[in-house]
Length: 143
Image (cartoon, rainbow, N blue to C red; front, side):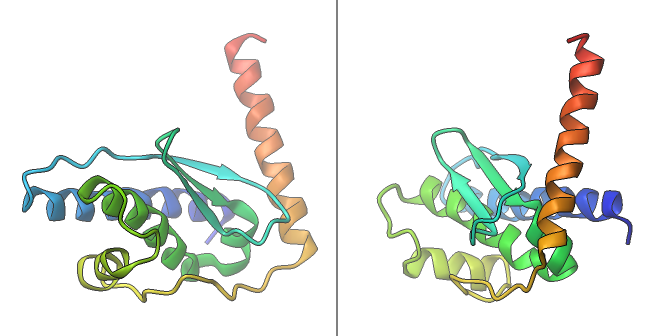
């Protein structure tokens, strides 16, 4: 899988888990508000981040490049945070409801932490890719 295909795959999986969350919340007469998908590049240990205030799931591209399809666990994990929050505000971040959503709704392992192995080259490549995207967007916007 090329890097571009991998990024497209990650975005498709994000949408897939959002759709599962939407189907699940219908049972409670709730509408799932899809969080946006965004990539970031960082040396941080965080493979992903659910930013409630921005309605955003951020995914660390360096881990995606390193883990490839195994990164799906992180995608499901971040979307599960939004599903949990929309069902019950105030529920524990990684509590029973969160674990239920991951295991029984998304059919994923209910892990809190990852063990992805990445190299410095994954971080460098991720930062370079995102810089290219940013420059291309600026050019297209006429900046």
